[in-house]
Image (cartoon, rainbow, N blue to C red; front, side, top):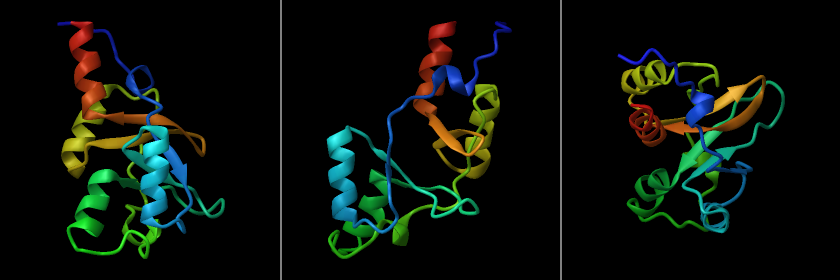
Length: 132
């Protein structure tokens, strides 16, 4: 068995964009398309706030499937907040366990109060297989 530790910082991507919670879903979709991302993190309102997160699948389930108008729904209405986050130094095996325990498939990598990237099952699996 390989004893090399693969950390979240080794596999995270920069594949996300930041938005304000007050933007509409229509605006959020435009930002996602312009940045080629499927994940949007919602900015903190102040130092005591937490990050939020919205994915394209959230928009599909909470707006499109419910026949709500993307022009009339704001990001804050459908975002997940607070988000489960991980540290960059954490072993991806523990991240995979955390994802399983919480029923999630991605999380921001946060150090201090800043998002450094995002890690998902895809990055964990692909990087782990490349290391073998």
